[in-house]
Image 1 (cartoon, rainbow, N blue to C red):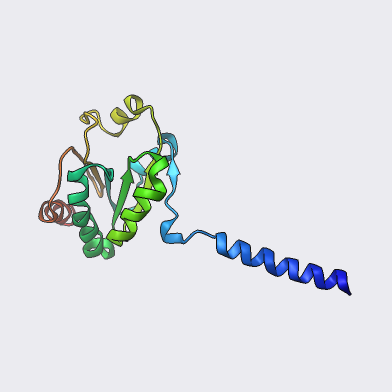
Image 2 (cartoon, one colour):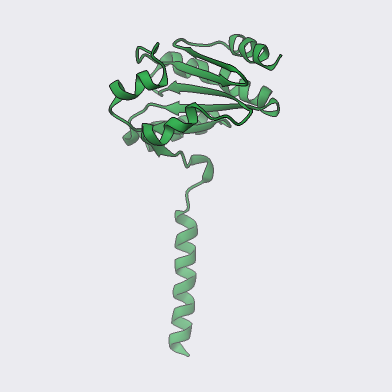
Length: 165
């Protein structure tokens, strides 16, 4: 009886520890190398994909994030998917990236690209890309373009509306 009781309490403790250690899904930002990320640049699923490369230390990037978030909110029902690709150092996930995502209450998908060989993967994103951020790829429904610049919401909206015509 004592052994059964001990196992019962041990199981409760293990379950409680497991629940406590389960990360909040909203804060569970995937970290991936470029080869794992690359298929996201050419999905043919009928949606319009807006992929923004940014970092918490980049002032223009931070300024434009609300425009991408508003774009997602206003056009998600029309099949627009926004992916925010952080180029922050993975060591800053807990002290910069997650707090930023929480503070901004981001609903768009966020991932962190952890691949130090940027000289290899930057031209694979776009041969036009110098490596500066912010940078954005928009593609889908017969449209594909690359932008190395900061966006205002109205500019993003105009691009999406032209694709949706």
